[in-house]
Image (cartoon, rainbow, N blue to C red; front, side):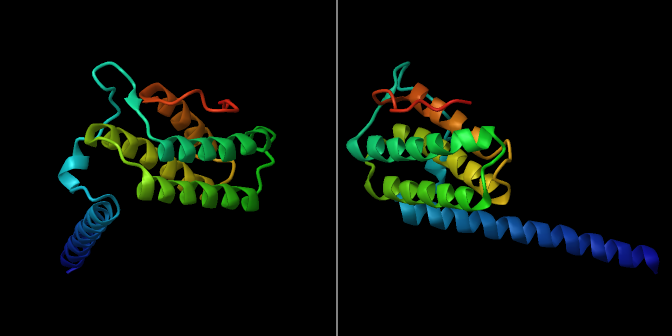
Length: 167
């Protein structure tokens, strides 16, 4: 009887994980299709890549949004390094980044391959935001976002971001 119960519980747990993952994938697909006008298949192959060895061209909304993200992150770096970044400061930074990501999604118009590369970087920024909100001093929070900003400069042709971020 105990083996039967264990088997049922294991089956229930596996089924729950499967259903949860399916719901998450469907939600992500719907959000991606809705927000960006692209199908999930276009984003599945998304990786950081250059434009035939060159940086991707940028448009004014991308440059403006990324500059604002850089400015907000740069402002938080000294407090982070002093182990003094507060939850309130982290929440403000997270809000600022989320607002700029929404701005980018609404206004940035790039060719599909450049857009796919940008989506990878936006995903990394949002992962950093999620970790920052959990723990303002998480090494997967602000440092991860700083690294993402450095990667952005490696893949996109934008004049040097004002106020370079430090790792």
